[in-house]
Length: 277
Image (cartoon, rainbow, N blue to C red):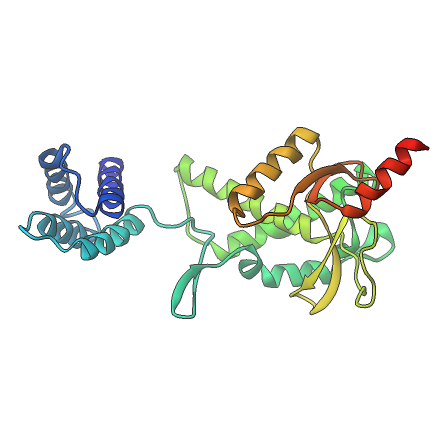
């Protein structure tokens, strides 16, 4: 029933946004579905959600429905029907509610990991360990350390029990993997580079670290094959349609994997010389 109601609400919302009217296809049947949902959830369902669905149904049946109010009610009902993942929390920025990203959610845990030292590497800071360039045995150890720390952090943030629900269990595993991947990408950076430039290095990107307030070299996202890197370029253009500069995929001499970046004019100048040589 929840899936049917969500599909109906999404369909109506899309119809109002595109055509400024409610689609009349299966209109009577859709209203009946909403009515049955309200009746079936009188005892077990949320009173707020039931009130939203009832208000939406009554507004749609009016001779002159308020489309703007209908869209707002649909958005609230969709959030109530399908709440954000439990690992998310929201914050208000300039009057608008935004879902906080990995950086905000795990800021404290990132700081703890940056200060941790590795005994088997003679006290080396964990943040300086690059799992992509170190030996496989040491990389596995560090990966297990980060996985344990992030799993603990995740469960501290989400104390609600999820007994017997495979969907919730899969969701929790997904968000724990996301949190672990985020921290594994954080570590392995080069510090104290205020007066340096990246030069010809293709493994790093120079950026500001909000944890320490320093300018650091952070490793770029690595891809195992050229096909994965080219697919990442297509996805990058999809989310940056305004970007006009060409992107390219290249194999890194530092980690032996593939990165993507803006096409370098310097490399283009050197290529004819190398080919002649």
